[in-house]
Length: 114
Length: 116
View 1 (tube, helix red, strand yellow):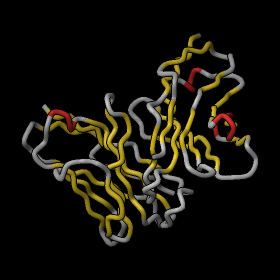
View 2 (tube, helix red, strand yellow):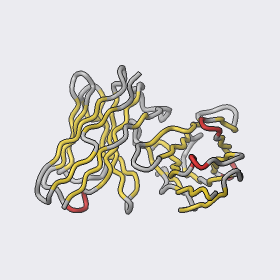
View 3 (tube, helix red, strand yellow):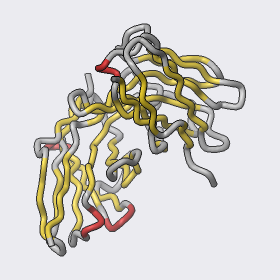
View 4 (cartoon, one colour):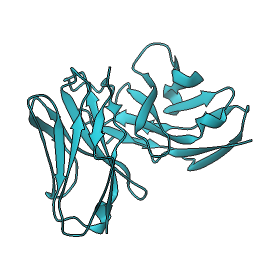
């Protein structure tokens, strides 16, 4: 069955520093991969997705992610973090039972220090 | 274009009561799915509806049910509430109907249910 591992529960980054959030997946074929962000008290917002093609994908808010098949990873990066990036970030893959069912990682909470 | 609208945003119930949550998808989106989010279990899939038919269901007891109307609006119901049902319930809609996995879900802001 598909699964997603986000090994970091919390990460603290200084404002202006670079960021990398890790995501490892288990998926039978070439995966579809998603990163969502959740601000406090809000729903999930899609940051970016990988379906095929270029393994480096660009998303909103200056985020990017790189698909590495050999490492079963899809890490999220941002070169310079802003205080407004403080939120919880979720990596997700479609379930093998399909029909809109996403399997989410446990999330990484990003704290941004001044 | 309006996003996914969920009502109510917050509600408090007591054990044994029932609750109904509503979701209006993005115009033109015919697939609606529901997720439960709790600190302990994370994000878990409840069910998905397309054209008024439930196509997929997660591993939840029968107290959790849903339906979809002809205008694609959806409701979910939880009967005989338990303390553990306290959660953020998220609705998502998608314009695609296939089973490819290449479906981008747009989520609403959620309904925060507290069971006392």
